[in-house]
Amino acid sequence: MNTEFQSKASLMSARRLKLRFRRLRKDGKMNIKRSIAFMLLASFLLCVLFGCESGSGFAPEYPRVAIIIKGSESDFWNDVKKGAYSAATEFNIDITFEGPENEEDYETQNKMIENAVYRNVGAIILSAIDFEKNAPAVRKAAEKGIKIITVDSDVDVAEKELYIATDNYSAGQKTADVAQKLCGDKESINIGIVNYGENTENGSKRLQGFKDGIKNIKNARIVAMISISSNAQSATAGARKLLEENPEINVLVGFNEWSTLGVGTAIKELGVKDSVCGIGFDNNTECVGMLETGELDTLIVQNPFSMGYLAVMNAANILSGKKTEHEIKTDVYVVDRSNMFSADVQKILFGFDKYK
Image 1 (cartoon, rainbow, N blue to C red):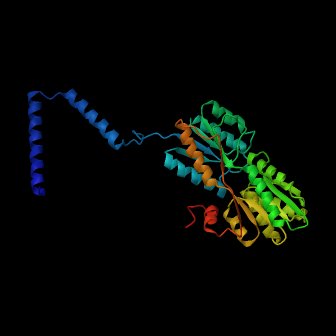
Image 2: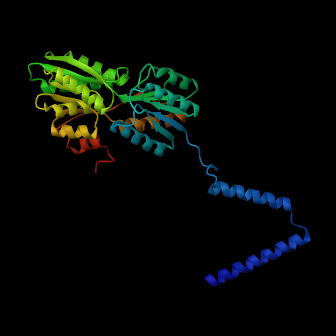
Image 3: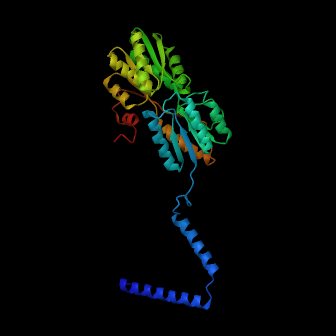
């Protein structure tokens, strides 16, 4: 059918409808109430099909999950965030992601938990700063029916659905094995430890695993230990202090991203990379650079992307009534200069989104 014919046909139809409307109105046969009802029904159907301009309309409401982490400045937490948002997109979960400015501020964390309760979220995913002091706020949330999932660092609460983390005790033991491998030929292995968050569950387990592992190494001893705040300045100052006050130290260990950054930076600033072995955790970009240049000798690399992804995926399952495991252990990888340039390890160090 050509365009000209279509236009003429449409015009004729419109004229016929107009004439019919006039006749109906003239004869009094137009039922006004029925017309109004028809228009309202039509408006409703259009709103359903195409959405209302107000923005609320009939858009689906997704389950809401609050993710509350220990800090917001590290590469580790950025990778957790990427994993969480990846799962949120896949499983249609509405998430918020926040943490205090420093990783010792459990009080701000508790306020964030209280705010999540006020917002009536379905679940809270928490990495607890303090194993005990975060517990009361978490219990109150659980009492309100909010599902609790802990990730990376646990809290002293029984009313939780799931804990997702590295096997931190085992990771501590792996660190002891690395110390023996690096310095086993030395007459004595004199160890300095830069730890973090004395009341943080994951740090305590890593330290205990390391101490138990060192007991099996006859020529190894812990010379000195210091606890730092989770920031680069505190970590570097603490690591330097250990080395300057204990020149016999030939192995310096950090148990999280910040303490590892401090270990590598102190070794670099003091120029002792040939006499001190640096061992640390995580894949901070600067730390990976110091692994290449020799200030750090080995990194115990976790899988934070997986932690974030699994936490949100399991939150979706729990909120839909599905059963989940009570505990999930994520992998760790021992990375040194002998394997850091392999394709698989590059993906671990830099993330699948960065590695091309």
